[in-house]
Image (cartoon, rainbow, N blue to C red):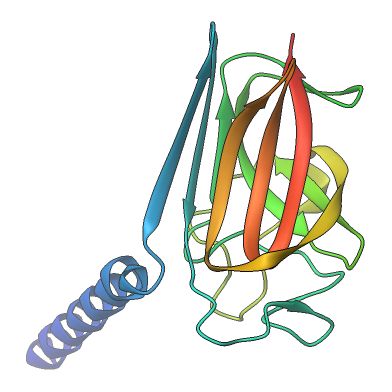
Length: 184
């Protein structure tokens, strides 16, 4: 019996190691990690996410890779994170300083951008459902969709200075979404 338990234990450790490798190394070879660092005076904003590629797929559509009206982890692999050292103002809605998971709900005309106080280790569970808990949403804003001529192969999140405001940008396929904000 002792020998059987040792064998089972070794198998569990090996399977766990293979799953860990698959989730942390192999999957990231297809959707590499990215860190966005934005600084403006004494404001510092950090975004961490993984960058999937289009690969000829239909991305934003009712039956696309990222379906309209459903919560998306906003990238691949781990949940994307958004961290700010100052309170931000998104069109009159305030986001306190802190670290958040970043979710989106894409639509044809607008996207909902969600900052959530819960930061799950992975963006989806083993059941394939997103790991977003709406009860922990700190802020939900809406931003318009702008369709571009140019097609962007790799998903990109960017932070840019635009006149007196700054913008949180999401770009993929022919879709661009910009959420203007200021710091308080």
